[in-house]
Image (cartoon, rainbow, N blue to C red):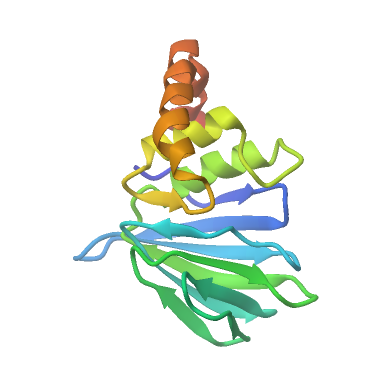
Amino acid sequence: MQLRLPQTINSGHGEIVRFSECIREPDGDRILFEGYVQPGCGPILHVHLQQAEGFEVKQGVMAFQALGSDVKHLHVGESTVFEKSVPHRFWNSSEEELILVSWAKPAGNLQRYMTILFLSTSKRSSNAPGLFDAAYLAVQYRGEFDVLEVPRAMKHFVFPVVYWIGQALGLYKKYEVDSLGK
């Protein structure tokens, strides 16, 4: 389920994403978004288990790396696609703001996941979400997204317990669609 569009989210750590439109296509919805990334910033190694994700550089230079591959760079007008289940990371390797025009297909829960992630990171001094938020994301979206830099033991043993505690304490009511869409 998608949140309202358009929607702008801010990680609090050099990344802003503007979700603009969800296009219905015969083989699945495609969500369109723009990314504004400050020098040296970008997401850590992660994987979309159900979505392909495409990027085109409008300004700056995007460095990127798929797991096991060398670092590559995209300049203005160049693009790349990460197919589903390909672990990747990217960052702004220039001195100016990196502006990306992007899409993900199928749209799935990308907008919700990133909204929750950025709500958490924007309140913290690091770009890592808080423990309860990380547990929520890892458990709720385990079939759709994964962060490879989080140890397996944490994802398989610690996060489920923390998630259960968060559920019992009512901490996740703030993630209901009506709450996130405000």
